[in-house]
Length: 186
Length: 199
Image: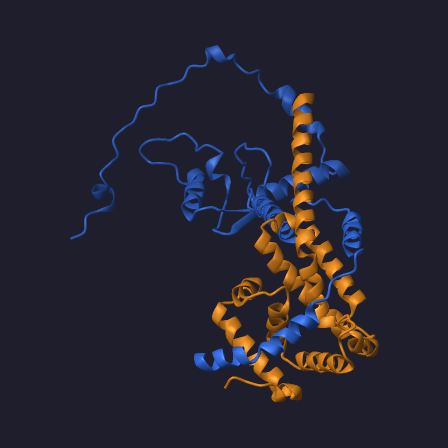
């Protein structure tokens, strides 16, 4: 009897340990994705980390249902986006965040002030997009996601992603005056 | 449209590059450690557990069972039973003592079935929890019995007369000496002769 109980407890422990290991693997491979999704909304380093951390904590609580890698990433992206949007709406540090924009992204030595201004204009243009278009734009700009991957992350058909991406970039281009000076192939 | 998109995509490389550069931001080195610490503070087990939906379903099932029990109990032998005596019984009972049969004297009807002097009204009585057949007592008899008992309690009735009756009464014969006469059944007279034939 005791032997059976010990065996059962050991098996349960093994299941928990296995889940812990799987979650650790997901955490390592998806932490950057969650952070960048949050950063795409908040553009504040600490805020983005907070949101990504919160999303991972929630994912941990529901991990028994999210063991599949793709399902986990889809869930994580959506949860992070939603949390970031909520934070973005409620955050009173809006002004300080806008000041941060001028310093982002990590200016290197070769970057000029003009490049920073362009980045600020770009973020303003992205902010002006409707949420659906903004999400597609951010996800497509993260880790080189192609249309298929973005569609998988959002649970959308590739055609829908493609059209949204096209529309988003068209609006961005219209808004960004500096793109008019870019040479086009048309 | 596709051609336009292709041209746009080709011409938008710089925009794509700008967006990718803007999003090419990495979390701080201690980010993973912070997440691990946060996860460690989550005390709930990582394994499957009862979700709110499961809890809700369980509560609904429990409520259904309770309701079923309540309804079942309410459909058991009701606290108030209704008995309706047929009008036929009334005629039999009333006619029994007054109109004895002409041809064959029948023994008096048993007391159990036609006891109710009913006029077709509903009689309401308390149901008994046991399964013994219920005893129907006429309302008048019951009222009379109640009055009698009340009078006895209040001393209005002299019970000493009963002792005198008991003393006068002859002792009962032993049962083995009782001879039961056989019942003879005679044919009924023709109704036509009694009531007359119609022309």
